[in-house]
Amino acid sequence: MIKFLGAIFILFSGACMGLQKSGELKKREERLLALKRTIQWFRAEIRYTARPLSELISENRDSAFCLLAAEETGFFRDPKGALQKAGEKLLKDPADLELYRGLIKGLGESDSQSQIEHMELYAELLEAHLKQAGEAREKKSRLYICLGLFGGITICLVLL
Image (tube, rainbow, N blue to C red):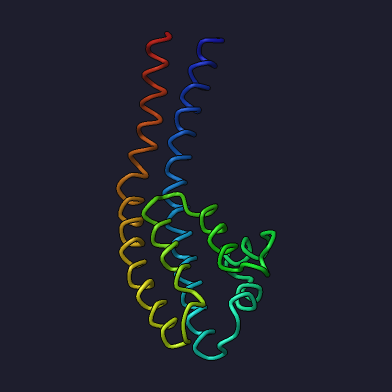
């Protein structure tokens, strides 16, 4: 009876590990979509209001990036730095982080029209990352779940 319960526990643990890895893929895609919405929001706000970056970040309560940046210490001294730290907390993939750093680097550096063009460029670059994240989620999600289950089955067979 104890062996049976142990085997079920091991199978369950393997499945949970697979689900966790699958969830990471989904979370990456969701965060990239959130970044896309944030870029679109910034682009519209810069085009029509041309307000300072700190005001734009403070006002955007729909973006996890802006919310985290607004909570950073020293936000009003360095809003770009706070926004960069927020992205580093949220984005884990090195390629996504590199794209994000490039986006942040150009914020508030030039006139409104140049910033809008900068945003449009990074929105297009982000599309490739979004497509790759979606494909990875579709291909690897089931793989990770199956690997977790098969790993649990293998351990059960070795122990029994």
